[in-house]
Length: 417
Ligand code: EPZ
Image (tube, rainbow, N blue to C red; front, side):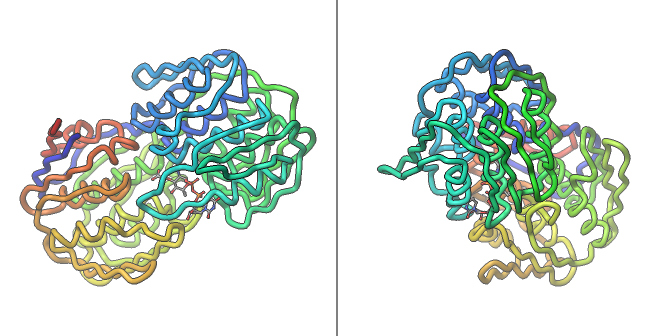
């Protein structure tokens, strides 16, 4: 286990290069199951969720090696099913269901474990795969899917689920005929999958809009690819810079993907400069409070909600944060209360009374982005904070201690055995 010891009250200053997107690369790895041959994927974040997905692919007969930030895959035969322990440890494992169904005509996967941020059912995934002709049942905590052949269909999602859009899209690439996915998720990571699949020989169009069309093909090859920058990692460091009154330059970002965040920060009084591939954050004299509501892309991303709520503690006055994507994503606020934060939560709304000092203390991360929020709070607070449960943060942030140190933070990773 590991924890992070932070001495707060120091401004972050310097330049950081953002890595590849966790929420893209995990799906590119699943999509490779559909193909044949050698894949070379670069700008892969060296994070635990990628290592877990390497384990999932190996369990399916794919040769997978992560070397630094480069991933080498060799797909010849595919067989079997992912081990339950891996699926339980990472919900994104369900993204192999569509590819396995399309390639093998069957897929069997344990129901992913409970999650700290909400119930997270799979009904939209399963309904969509059934529309393509799959027979799916839940047997003793496992999903068993079968389909001799998948046939293209016109599918309307009841909610623009990112994972369901991706699972259905991947399965449709090898279906007979044409599939149209309506009310599809529009996240940038879906554009990444479309580009990757098309390089493998698929015929996908419309990603980034609400209507995605897939013309099925008999088989797929392989591709080399560079993962798009991680807009959530970038947003986390933008918020950390603003929260500490620092001056930070971020490289390898796509500013357009950060637009909802940059717009609200500018309105709060954070000076921000944007260039091609670069975002610069400058110190703000005073922050004004704000009101946000999370929503599917291009709305304010739920994955930046905990970090933003923490920043709003610095703004003098009352801020309101509404979480509309998950039903339980305010768990970290109890920990912020230990630091003196005045935040009241009722249902999906948090009311933040900001402008008061935060005091460092011992904190426990309960999930990935909540953990990132506690680290930002530790950077903002007077005195020392110790953040336990760092394994949550290691799932999605590469070397967060080293990157913060490089920006001048006093942050020390303690391995506690
Ligand atoms: C992806 O999860 C991301 N994870 C999440 O990031 C992100 O929060 C989410 O998209 C929304 O942007 C990865 O890409 C690996 P959804 P996903 O299906 O695909 C409900 C992080 O911190 N829903 O769009 O699981 C669901 O319960 C993680 O990096 C159903 O009801 O998100 C949730 O309330 C956290 N039925 C909402 O939709 C379904 O069949 C959004 O889920 C599927 C989803």
